[in-house]
Structures are given as structure tokens and as C-alpha cells.
Image (cartoon, one colour):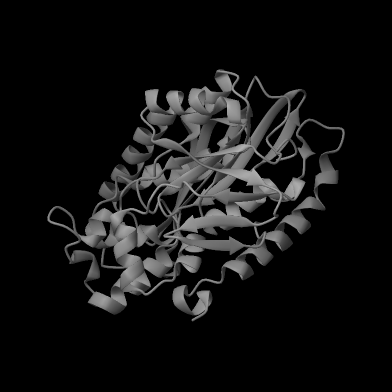
Length: 362
């Protein structure tokens, strides 16, 4: 069965649309040439872009949390979503070498529910306290029947834009140009599915368990609805600390839509490099369970989900112990997961088999 039929989401079409949007956006870069705010990096495939404001180099990233929102509507648990919202943009900035500084958010809803807004923003504040980010703006718009969702309470969509400053120890964002064969790839453990791939998750669980799938017990302590709301771990504080320590970090891949193959390819493609990943973190139990329930082949699963690995770092091999020690000090799980090759492919060792992917990022 094709990926589109399985999930209802065509990843390759999404990549084509993103590329077209980027191409059209790039045509506007000339509008600021020679002025404050000029675009000074326009590498196709970066997770964020850089503007130069009279020598101050800032990155900008925009994203949302997608259909994970429905899990909150089903369970009535809203306070974890702020971590997902911030993670999607802060970690895109970190993947470029930017230290996130501020976030602005937009909540589009059908009607206002004070308690839900309160819980959403309390969660975002907690996430920002964790990552050292300031909430500097926002908008709440009532759109009536234009918005819909699950249940009878407020339905909404939540998106944001974050700004970051290029780290003081960098002269330019990570663009993959310094990557070479033999470089080390370090995996950072995720807490769960983070905030992508939920269209497929919901489809699998609704087909297996029916309309109330979110109430079905996953284990003795959690329902599927609760376990799938596990908040995204935010990696930007670790990336910032690695750069503070002047460790030779060359690139970072934030594993969101498109999974490991697409997102790692984005940082490898400038040098037409490949990767062999033979030491990734194992899938979380809930990932194994849902993959089995939906008969999702490993080849597809690694493009839908992070499979237990939320970010991949590319660094010089001699920095392995320093980076792993620093990650441990900050409470992150990290491990050497593989190395850069000259194959041009992203190859993943999984249960004795090797999955091979052609380059395919945005």
C-alpha cells in the first residue's frame, strides 16, 4: 500500500509544494538587498533562514502543531501542547545554529473558551521557561464555522513564529558545507511522536478501536489519548550549550515531517553526502504498538515518525565524548548513532535489515 493511502498525507507532494513556495519566496529576497533585514542565506533545505540587520544576524522559523490538537480535544488535556508549539520552531532555529529568543503565536478558534486558552498559554509559558525564550506577541481570532474539530468545546489551530540570534561562536548558520565522510552522527532521544505524523496515528487507531479510540488503555497507567499527548522535548538549550563550549558541531537535523530520511538528507545534500545509521535509539513502545496495529512497514515508518530520535547532530568524531557528557549533564539522552558516508543515501540498520533512502528533503 502506498504511503499516501496509508496516512492520507502525501509526503512527496508536501516536499514539492514546499519547494515551490520556497522558489517563489526566494524571488522576493531582492527586495531587501543592501538594506537592513536583507536575506543573507538562501540555501534551499535549511530549517530556517537568516536576515542581517546591520550586522545582527537573526533566524526566523514558523510552524504549528497540526492534528495533535485533536488529542487535546479528545482528552481535555491542553497544557502540554505549548511544548510542541515551541519545539517545532525553536528546534528548527537550533538546527541552523540560532539561539531562540522569542516567539509569537496565533490561536484561530471557532469560539472562545477561557479555560482552554489559559491552559494553552500556561503550557507555552512553561516551555519557554525551559528553553529561555520570551513570548513577545500573539493573536486570538474567532473564526466561527470556519473552524471545527472533535467534541463540543472550543476548536482551534495553533501556529507560531520564533526568532533567534546566530550563536556568538558562529560566523554563519549551519549549511552542511563542512560535512565530510567519517563525521560522527549523534542521536538525541525523543519522548514520543513529538508533533508530526498524527494523521496516520489517528487513522490507524480509529480503524482498530472505533470512534472512542483515545479512551482505550495503552498500558495500566495511560490511555492512547494520554500517551500520544506526551510533550515534545525541546533540544535548543543543548545545541546552544554545545556551541557555548565551542565544540565542533557541523549540522543538526530536526526530525519532524518526513522523518529521519528527509530531514537528515536536508543537511547532507550540499556535499552530496550520505549516512549510515546503525546505532539509533530504539522505537518507543507506543510506536511499536501502533506500527503493528496499522501494519506500517519499517521503510514507511521511518518517513512518518522520528522512531525515538528527535534530533541528529553531525560533528567531528573527536567531539563525541564531550557532546555526550554535556547532553547527560543537561538531562538529555544521547548516543553515537552512525557516521557520514559518500554513498549519497541515508541508510538505516534496523532489526538486521538495511533501509536505504534516496535524498529527499525540502
